[in-house]
Image (cartoon, rainbow, N blue to C red; front, top):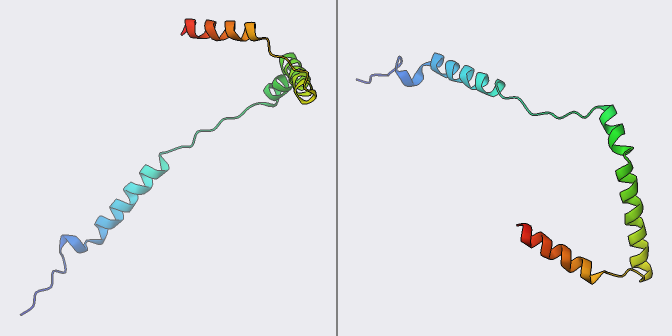
Length: 88
């Protein structure tokens, strides 16, 4: 005689339904982080005097390096390295 476990816990379809619902709730609870920069902030960043001065200085140094006329001030470089390591 063979006995089938028709009403066993392993074959309970409601249990699977409840587990699926729990997973959906957990997944829907997470939100992604977002960052939005306003148009006004973008204008302020692009029109800053600091950025234009920096770009001019960089282009000047690049042209000096390309021409071979760029000279490194060894004393100033050494002083800034020493100051950096003394602060840390």
